[in-house]
Image (cartoon, rainbow, N blue to C red; front, top):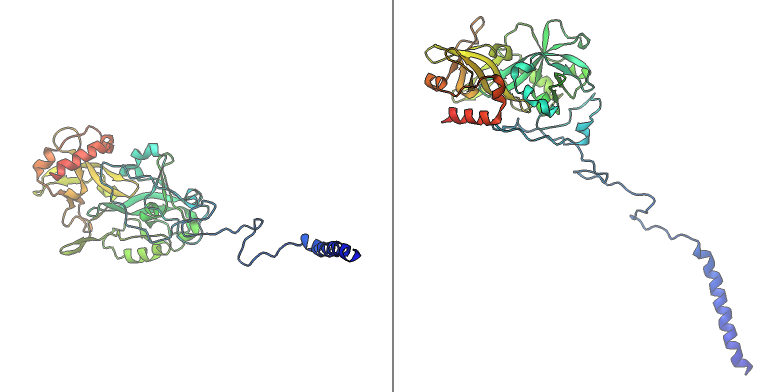
Length: 349
């Protein structure tokens, strides 16, 4: 009987020894397998479109051509990335890319549609400090776009006295610039140091011949994104240049094909987001009111760009089309999208 009673005792002893062997292993932590992230050391994974924080990475692709929004419609609001909304100082590299200039406040957009209002705007750097004054603009009248800002620089930029800095308007439109109607300013996402060696035109120098343009574009390609807008217009007969200064176009005389005076340009209406100019507002030589004339229906008279020549416009349509055009009573009426649509319909029929 003693032989059989010893079996349970031996089993109990064996179990007790096994328990003792397992006790030290209970407090030991199992090694983390390779490639597994623990809860105490999270890994942030960045993708092409953003990070796990929800921030979108800024786009750095080649900018598209300036938007071709039909007259009579307001361009869509520009969606800004966090970098665009609060860019901080820009010392090196190109500004954040955009597809249109930022308008602020949006309630004052209509004031920015008048070319006459933009003359004399302050040009500011990325931190809001003054770089100069936009004393004029170069307008390609056959492409119907503002191409360049002519800026009178502040003395701190150390640019030759009397020279105007030539800045592509695309520095505003596709490089996240801001047009501020309330403060009458154009803010560029650039620092003063980026204007070192900037191209200039001496005061009074005509814009044609345009032998200054190649060097101008070479400089700015390293600073901002610029596309294909230049002083040249492509035609079946080759490149032509039909460019005027804003100060020339405001107040210029409009004639018919037989050199009869039709009226005088009072203003020009543009889409500020892109810089495209849609209409001249013309006071007719005969009759009351104002006539909205599309830039596409005008031409700069032959020889008018020669040194010393009188700058003038010629209507491409028949003079009866001008005299029979609907009239507006003030230039502010030209801001109305419905009115712009009506005028486009009239001139295109």
